[in-house]
Image (tube, rainbow, N blue to C red):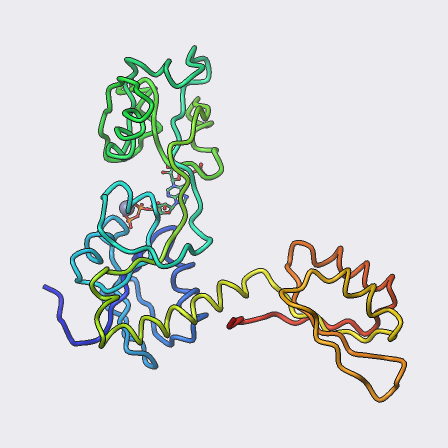
Length: 291
Ligand code: PRT
Ligand code: ZN
């Protein structure tokens, strides 16, 4: 039985694909803690929060039942468990698709062709809903793992499993057929906790920090000098969050321009800025953006 020590609890995956990103995200929120996969609890030194490390499959129920106040888990697990939890944020990691894959030489072309097929999966509930929505009668074979082996072992004809790169399916002679669910990691909370006057302020503080570090992800802060006559050209080039900051310099012909730029367009923007007359361009990482 878990101790209730009055501190808030957030459940994260103990060891798996979501663990490092979850820990990094919490650290980016300024939380200071030792994370040891062997221990169930990691208390934060500078926040009223304990980190609970458990199997990802248990996270929705723990949060739903109030054993943990919040959790970080894939949408796929929440949907499969049909957990009554509040999704506070999508976190931009753990991205994958729950897909039906079929053998390379399968005659299946459209969803209706799945009729009568034996579909192996560890996601029976999501799959049954999908088949019902699409009015297809197929046999759902509930498996506990190694789903991709099911067709070659003749346990199933097709499979419904998570896919990220598609390599596992391909290596097992399967090809993607259709997407049942798109998923990524989300921050969830127990609905009652959100109305708890004692806990709500700390949840809000954590939410603001989380949003800030998510907002800053993939962005860079740019500072440069530019001739006054280039300002309007530079403003057009900068796809800033808001209007760029323009600061006068001792030399009346020059200004300093500051702006935020997304990583993916960063080099294109730099080249254009140089052409427009910008010099001394400095690029710094951003830790957080509080709107
Ligand atoms: O021990 P515990 O129960 O906590 O972990 P687990 O083994 O059940 O989960 P884990 O760590 O494998 O996955 C945790 C979460 O990561 C999942 O619930 C998803 O939300 C997310 N995720 C993202 C994935 C994948 N990508 C993924 N590719 N989960 C599993 N896979 C598996 C998939 O099942 C298949 O076996 O990876 C294989 C396919 O990968 P590709 O790259 O070959 O397509
Ligand atoms: Zn699991």
